[in-house]
Image 1 (tube, rainbow, N blue to C red):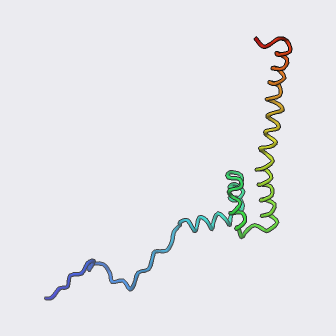
Image 2 (tube, one colour; image 1 turned 60 degrees about the vertical axis):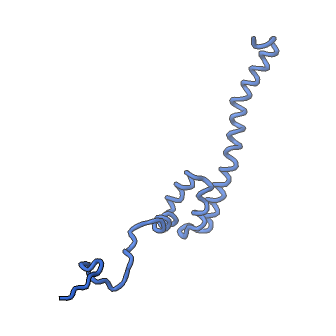
Image 3 (cartoon, one colour; image 1 turned 120 degrees about the horizontal axis):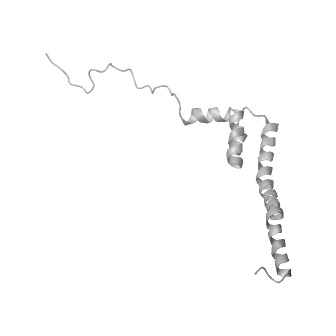
Length: 110
């Protein structure tokens, strides 16, 4: 009785290697993300202009929608900090400066 010893001889003979079907991963998550407009909006609200590349490559959004979202996102990114700075300086800093000026006109704060 001649026996040939092979590694894995109790395993069934395979015809060739076939990778298992993909059940998830980066590519599937990426495809889901760019095809879901609601998720793109959430990403824009969360990450701002860093999410614009996903908006641009999204096949579900129309060109007009892509332009609108890009302009609104960039506009808010540029305008909002300037508006908040003006608001803060007008309502927080100016009253403090006025109080210092009044104290100095009366002879000092001390």
